[in-house]
Length: 223
Image (cartoon, rainbow, N blue to C red; front, side, top):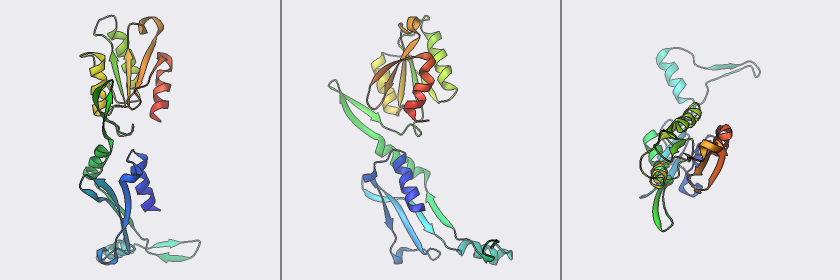
């Protein structure tokens, strides 16, 4: 159960299934306390290597603590009228290795209108910013509405606000840091009270009324 749960956790958060696998340890690899260990391995640039270990430590830990402390650490099951020392399953994941794996899996380069684009296809839950708000201009007529949109989204999500350089370059900057969605506030927004939502991966753009923006963003992000 735990081996499958841990493997699927990486896949559910954006690592392609073909880049991770489970490798059971051979008998001569097992630690003295383990009767079964499997590694989740990731396909790093140098090949498959350990990302996380899941060890069946049996009752070694609690019996060792009980012996050293003199305290009983067993459990009484009133239904079966039995006492036993619980087993421990130890999933041991490293934050640094996991971060490296997610970044390596997410990094991509493609071509848009004849120009190279670098994009970090992070799962929305892992992206540092979930949404970017990009006013088309820094003019005073536009920025108050843009900040209202930012505040609306910031109540729920981490939001970046960028008003420097042209809109194309700002899109590219957000693509590079993995921001899933970008919301553009333009001069039409002053009249129709709507904004344009751009998807990082498909680059599809849809016009959305501001009153529906939070629900639209939530639907696209999945939370």
